Length: 622
Picture 1 (tube, rainbow, N blue to C red):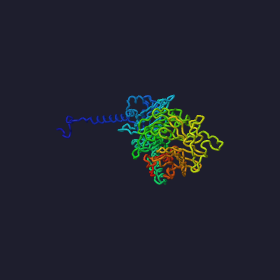
Picture 2 (cartoon, rainbow, N blue to C red; picture 1 turned 120 degrees about the vertical axis):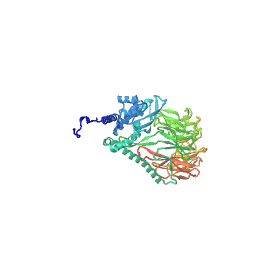
Picture 3 (cartoon, one colour; picture 1 turned 90 degrees about the vertical axis):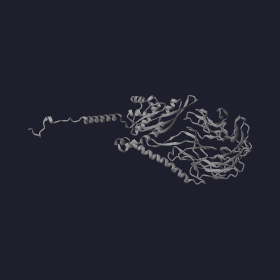
């Protein structure tokens, strides 16, 4: 009988072990290795950057300007510890060409985690100058993006250049200045990106590589904070130091460098020269980017500024016509030429009446209704100036008054058809036998106000000079070419400057210096009588209120000047500002109820390179 504890072989059933767990394990292992390999093959270098900015085309399409810009930006990126995709590498060019403009896809293929791209839109203005001249302005909308982000961070950059032709101007534009501008706005966006900041807190290798970038970020933050605080402190000092009857209202930021040009029913017209601070990637120095110069209205009702025009290198101070409709200015086209340009005060299309690479224009003044423009013209930096009048529509000459070896000392419009002109002859002849100076038979004073008395001989001199005076003479010069009339001849030691006329057309007003000191001179046009009202300091920049009852002027010199008014009826002087800065170029508002002026000071951030100037105003009640 068989043992029941023993099993027969036929009773044993051996079930095979299932193989699917092993297969699944092997499949998972293969998948993991494949994924790791794919990740390894497709992973981007978190510190590598592709620069592809369109400047007259892309560098990989042959644009030399874009290549120069990319090389400059790559150099700065490398200096901060970033890796860069080299511009010009044939393999890189092939990848970018295949990407069809998809720079994010191209960056992934090139293992770059970031792409800096964008496009500069170009405007070219050709000028009819011998040898050719083209000015090029560009505006770039730039983007900084990590390849796995949903969207880019954006910044705007402006630039401009000039050269004999547009291609040379674009290549010149792509140099150091535009490279600095692009770096100033893109590098902070890159270094401050969250992914870079994460690396700087946990990746030892990245921390080592980006040591320069970390220092750049720290220096930039500190410098920008100091930049803003310096202007806040300047405003506080200004307000604390003001001891005048009414503290001024400042109408623009303390960092502004504005010029006050005039007033009308629209408000105050100013020229702007704004800046944007940045810190250099190499030396970590605080510098500034200059924006285009511009013209804008500060509305009389206190509303937002209204831009009118942008350009660069406005030469001197533009002028506003008496009717408030026309602005005349001189543009310096980057040293290649000067222009006589008219800008409609309502924001219409500007008109360049003259463009000249040799002659220099200055002190433009449109006639009261803007029909003509007067200006000084000279052929070299130190050459004497002639006084020209041209038609505001055609630019054709209306009249030219030669300097005649003498010197002009200012002018103002007497209505639409004549100028009031200060002119000093080259030399004063010796006294006649009767002891007079050969002009009006006086010694230059009338015993009361230190001013010369009678008008000079209005007849042309025998030598054919247009302005035959023998010293400082005030002339009425018709624009129709007829003979000028001498309104007044100043005696020895009398100096007149800054001529202007009263709105009622009856008097001319000047700043004056003479034996009795400084003052304000008032000339009655009907009889040529001059009265000098004394002032406590040297006088500058006169203008008359709409009622022709008061004159506003600046008084002082050097680093300090104040705003004052004089009552034409009594000679009473009232000082309206008392501070430690230069308040200058005062003007009455259109309704005469406020006095506008510039407040000029050293820039606290760039004291040797720049001054700040803010349009300010105070109330005025006669």
